[in-house]
Length: 192
Image (cartoon, rainbow, N blue to C red; front, side):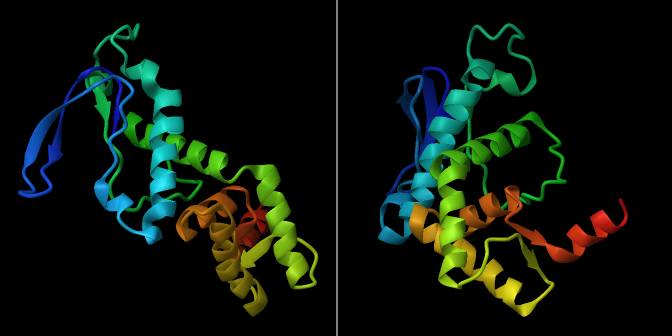
């Protein structure tokens, strides 16, 4: 959660599990402690910190500030923006229904772009194919066993290099169309 103004937020007490109000200052980022307990959760912690810090703080703080020219209407009446819960569909055709969904998507995109910048990712992509003595190319999932294998292995490879989750790596690779659903891709261009 990112605090856009000074105030109080409810945080679960570690012993009782009950919500307790704690004071926060503008610019405070509150991270779930479960992300700090094991080495396995470091990629998720890094992504969450970037999502809240680079994503929400840099992109959205003006929308939540007290001097917002549009006033305290709608979503902007809240002083804080809570991180999303659960998995969301990152299909590029998905349309956001609310401002909060749009802001979450923007923060996710920015954090993945900062953690896995396109130029560096392009080099990693080339190295992946060099290992297989193959030319770098778009991977069409669902078209051939080789591409299906690459579609499974490339996100794992990228996740290890950039210390992000496999899911975050897959989303970034799909956004850059390094990995695409072959049937949908072909149907789209066959009908164009």
